[in-house]
Length: 430
Figure 1 (spheres, one colour):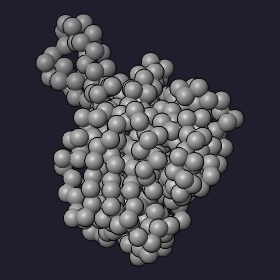
Figure 2: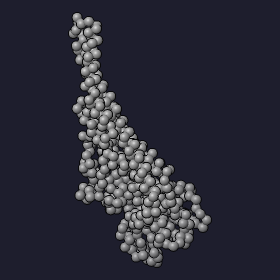
Figure 3: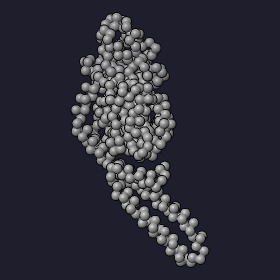
Figure 4: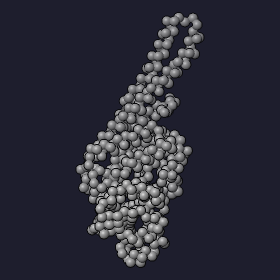
């Protein structure tokens, strides 16, 4: 099997491209089902987060989709022409694809180094693909090992020390603008996983008021009940339907919903500056697709930042942990080498066994045809004939079996196993 990954992230694609290629849960399910129909012999996992969209594929060596077909498929599912996003796409195959997944799961490829949410996002994408039926033996082995790698990195290094989420970085960004929080009102829009992580960091800053809102009010109420609110801070759940009113009260807005379109639109907020008596308003939109209409940033005394504007804060964190990054790369390379070697050996064995079975079956069929015709043949001669056929079979098997074993450690070993299977008409492994 060949393994490929195509995708884009915060380094290769603008926010505008990323949000057009973003998938929610329902979109992922539809895309994976479409992939199963279009490429029935392929396995697939679709990962879509605020900073990346990636399609992982395992397919027979001569099967589909090829890389260019996978890119076209990705664009088709989102209704985007290739010329609009193709320049932002990276691609990796086989060992490089495995290495890339290990880096992603281990949060080395994240905007926020050591990001605490990325592993759960990778696990969720894998589980979703399993539920749709697009995960087979190859991707199952790769992703399961990626989870082991991620645990190893976080256990053996300090990669996850400090604030390691986009939400935490957003709070740090706000700290660079406001010297104090104890006189500020913060509006949190969104009570999902990212909103919850952001709130925990936010409460450490002890703002005066926190206004929490979510499209589903029950989720906001549940989260509020779970929070430990520090002394001197109030936290209340407010109505999602009256966002404009809450914006008038806030000094800082952090938005983290999973909506497919903006929840704050320019046309509805034209009068906001006057309503606020032109007090400064900081809005940090860390959702992809964006929650906040970019034109809102043109309003008087409204300062709008999106997830890509947090890059400078994230880069400072990366620079501070260069030694940990180097250690992580060493660990990943060890895992990649071990995994690739084990997979090559695992692929060689079943192919040799299938070839042996194929030759034995042909021998048996020929003996079943011949022996009944040798009516005057002695039992001794019959045994010699059977022994001769067996010896011929083993000698014919020796050369291809030895060649496969010799190639077990080679990077192109899968080419040999697939060639043998195609030449002798062997069935693919389950």
